[in-house]
Length: 397
Length: 143
Image 1 (cartoon, each protein chain N blue to C red):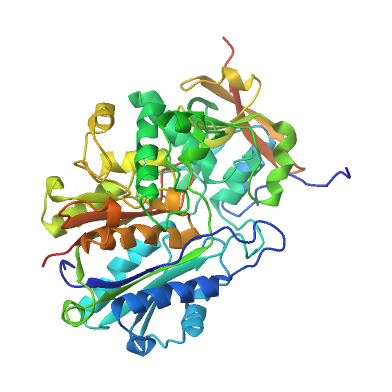
Image 2 (image 1 turned 180 degrees about the horizontal axis):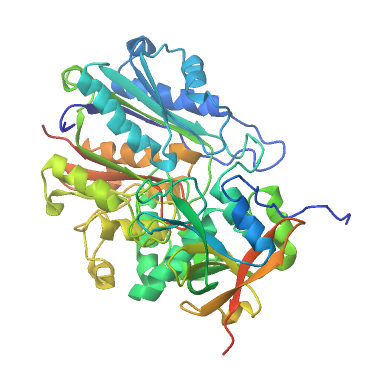
């Protein structure tokens, strides 16, 4: 069944991000405060009230530092909603995009008419303890002194550079384009423009990964509201339609015990979404790609089919700013806006909606009608990212 | 400064992995293989994740492989237990592709970190981490 034009985003909410709590004695906010703040912004944007969500959909991204096993239900209580369809986003950083597909399917089925999707985290102001959970990471990674995702992404990046000859200049170009867009986004956290030299000179975090390769944790909350097309037409803002959706979790390219770590599941998730939409690559006006690391943005551009695998010259010749043929991360991406755990990935949906409503301000992509958003989550043993979701949004029916 | 007693986190010996750790304690590297589709299975699990067969057996490995990729850990970050690795800095975390195919996360030991290269041939060595746990690590092959 196709989800094309079966649901529309009618409201978005994004709190500013901060790092309150990183210094002793600073005033702090909780996850509950960020999530209700984001919800309030989304309701105002859509012209809806909480009562519109009784018996309807509620989706909540599940943070990696998990407050407790029933967090989505607790969020319903925090917000004061009695949902008829409650879903936790269980695909890590891909959760915001996964829930877009899941809620659109629920709307399309007639189960619900409208859904609120939200997420928040406050890693600097709340501390949940850092116990090591059972699984591959505990048994086969941490005993070797791996230092979280940085270690594994560093290995992906080094292998990529080795196989295809990509250089720091290629990665730096993506970092610079993102920061340039952030400088034009009042809600971005890191707004001072940088140069490729700044990128190359930034501190090595996990060789070859540098500081300016990495997303920054932050406190914050994000939300969006999805509605049936009929309902969407009655609301305040121009509906932004879901045109296509695809998801691949636990992708493997080659044998599962030793797959190609340089190919990402967006390769297949993207194809499903593109086929559902029925468009070509040249019809896409911008990309908002999940960006926990610069190398991951780079790989997605290839694996989504915008250039051939390993064609580094594409990165030399393409302008990735909002003025060019393939704008990426038009609000600066998560790397410059901050990552409140799994709510981080919601940023890309929100920015896509802004662009498609022509609310992009100084960074508006001219005449944008169609944009692609991705979400990624989880770094499994021996592989690239384990949960990949792609959504295509458009402002025309 | 008072010394903090931080020990390195150890793997749990799960039922699926017990044969692996028993062999490792005898300095032998073994992995599971599917008797039906012949796929290698790593990490240990109750069934073949290529074909679903439950007919999986433990096979001795050559212990030889090559570095697929690596990073040099120069700073500990994250959870408190990471601190236990501070005295080892700098050290290499690597993906090693065994000659038979499976890819392991491991450490490259027995050479300066600057000497580690992609594609470098390595062979297994076992380092005792506790009474029951011998961790397979890899060193450059002689010559």
